[in-house]
Image (tube, rainbow, N blue to C red; front, side, top):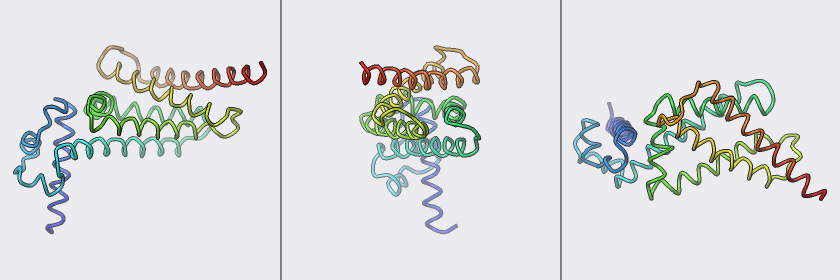
Length: 203
């Protein structure tokens, strides 16, 4: 193994350790020493990949978000049908990742909200995902782009809060029922915006 390969391997191990600690014990417990112990590496190797512990927090968060996007877009591409079918596929991929691996769900849905470093990142990603949702429903839509984007942003926030409630056990629900309900709420929001927008323009 080359020197570069060893550095890359240590980075992967630090990220895996960061995920384990952030996703089970929380960000305050994810310290440099704790991550090094979890990774089975000397603490001196940490700085070769991450200037600060906060940079590791960001790397863990970004890796989960990248996986969410990859799975969501793959689900959309693999699904025949219109916007409703594609939206359900994307929601299913998102929920499956965040609820099946509770560590990833906790990092994205809970820990990021209490972190001054991850908070702005979470907001930016929520806005980006809302843009993706809006884009899925642009074709043939009578809504103004702004109306569509606002509805998508509203739904993304609701999806996040609902998945959080399921993740922490506040709500117990069958997986398919959950996805169906989230998808129904998405399109109910879009219908509501369409009705309201139409009334405003004709009123």
